[in-house]
Image: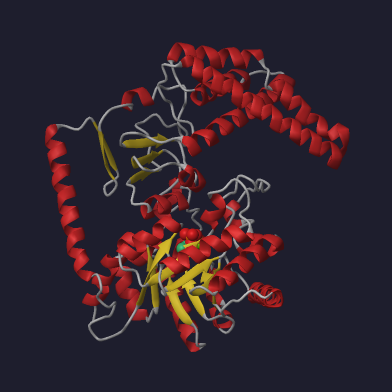
Length: 527
Ligand code: PEP
Ligand code: MG
């Protein structure tokens, strides 16, 4: 995330630049030391070379010049420098110089990363802002102090990505995957050489997340229109409050369990305010993403216990960490993949990194003693995976018993979010207590649409007959095998889909906390 900011204190920016360069050097030195032990001096030498590249005089001069002449933040000055040098070198014949240019760009990108990490953790805005960025990953959003952030505008990413889901559950209006005012090139990248931010920086704007519009310096008339719309929205919300305390039941008496999806501890309050009947999906990976090291068993136990105690006897379905694809951990480097969504992700990581998985399961079972916890596993594609999980679960329970930790039996469920899982849902249903259909991923895998790729979003259609048929098939197979069927994908808040889900016989629906009462109202109006 590189945002251009006007900074009159240029000396401070230069000091930040030098400090981050020093940290980068220390990191490469550490890598050198480790590589020396693991792969020998010849191979380790590249990290030594990286340390030298960080002293590239041309780069350093350029960054300082940009900071001084444009009065901008260090990370922006570095990004522009990288962009300028990359363009300049691209046309050169000499492959050695071209390769070296690439290496220098890489080490200075590391400096940007260090600066951004520090910023993301520390940054707090003292007045309401709409944050512009090329892209924000879910973990960057987690790190931000969001007290005064009232909107996000991002050039990359798409409205079905985890980034978008996260901003929705935070109730922050966002424009995601937008052509930032024509400054975006054909690949969807903002050209950093263009002066984008000054045009918008410090100006008042209206961000309309419903229609996907950003109105910079709105007229009096537009402000009045939007003020009215906001009042109307507040009024509608108040109307929905009427739904609080009411049962989620259709006119003909069919009861649906209406739960909330949460990403962290803060969401519990929103879920309770909106009268959710429990938590149908706790995306536990956000706990991992919000830290700069892997959370220990004790830290996880404390968090799960606090959450389950806070929801006072209602059920908490913890999904084990769904790491990978667009949810990466800064402290756990995975090899780059051509197709991350089809790669090392979810249960595949858990079954591979057994110690990490066992640590999480131990923490969950220890917390189970303090409330009503169920466990759910992401990205399942085979019965063998479920059997392997159950074996690990059994050994975790045996271990805890031996060590004297009290725990309760937890219902076990799986996400149905791959077409493979749908097709064998009869076999899977015989293995578990419940299903939760994850239509966000099921749509991506069924329709062959990368959910983070904005260019193909028009093909991302959860209303597609292929998705509806799979939902029906999953529910039928679940019920035929004595298994509960739920859904936790974003489409479950869509009135038309809710009607269909109830018709298909869904048992549990889990939605963004802010949509709980809205969905209850729809269900109560159904036959
Ligand atoms: C889903 O895939 O539908 C889902 C709920 O999980 P996530 O959005 O976290 O991938
Ligand atoms: Mg999913």
